[in-house]
Image (cartoon, rainbow, N blue to C red; front, top):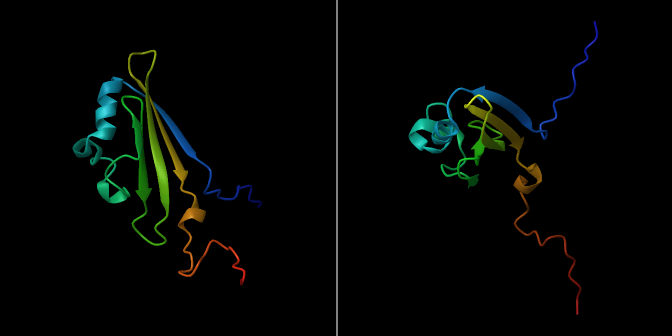
Length: 118
């Protein structure tokens, strides 16, 4: 028996696309109004309650944080556009945050600059 599974590339984006019957305005409210968003994306999963960025009616981006160690973080972007049927083309894109920015640095770190004696 052989295993043809590819390695888990956690830095690659996960993209999902849905065609919804609801109009874009309704989908926008569902992803941006906290009381509605909480039904399917609980605040406990968010790194911050406010979006990191948004383009009204088109795109909103949140930062997510795992609830258990190692507490990895990712960005999730919701893209909303009308589709031909009068509904919504809804795209969800999740990307891992750059782990290098999250690495601990020694307290005496000076950016690896060497000091010369005068």
